[in-house]
Length: 126
View 1: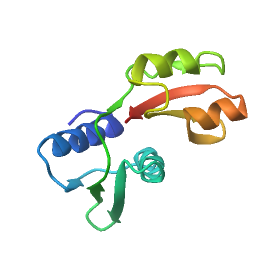
View 2 (view 1 turned 90 degrees about the vertical axis):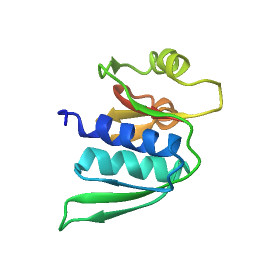
View 3 (view 1 turned 180 degrees about the vertical axis):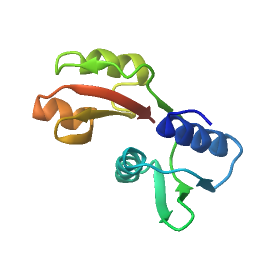
């Protein structure tokens, strides 16, 4: 197990999708991972997630998802650079989402561009 909980969880989700599994259980959780899952649920990449605080695990039902990965290293970007990284990680103009950690919390790259704020790139999915 590595130190990056978000990267491990997204890897488990991606591998489960490739293995055609509907539900996946992740055995370690963090607040950052929960926020990433909230954004993925809003965008339809996962259908639902259930947190089991007793076992410290999350059960995730996978939705419309082709690819999901953590961005390493976590590049710091200002508002003008978000478009450059969006082009690097996403396959098409209106397809996918880059998750940015800003001083106002986690948000998608579209929200960060609307707010005109930069931050740290966390992950992407489509």
